[in-house]
Length: 164
Image (cartoon, rainbow, N blue to C red):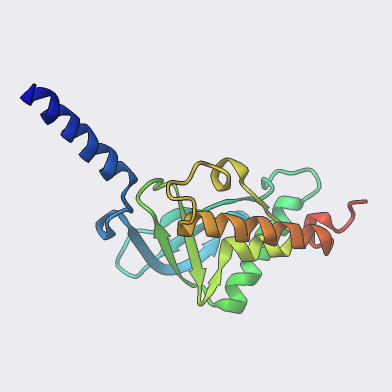
């Protein structure tokens, strides 16, 4: 009987650890000068450090080979954001997914800003994913991203300009 309680307590602790917020050590940062590669990807480098390719969390931009040149327009929009808000970026990887990050140029969230230009859409596979603790920062950011995309559609910006 003692062993059953031991295993039950262990399972409870494991479940609690899974639901707990990420420890600060799981969060990674990357700071440096950014260059747009596509409408949703940048290369970040800092003097004395190798550059790193970073995909902007929560958005999808048209591919560079798009037959309507939307990929070129998307990259130009991201270039413009970096010129206007500074090419020094701060990217935060949340420790869950090291393949993408939320990046800011100054105080501007580049992902959200790209959605507002109309040259990107919210990546529903990421932004609608089951986020632990529904009111977490990721869930709130996902909601803001969907709203930014809706505003671009309604305002007929970027790729939505010629849509009926």
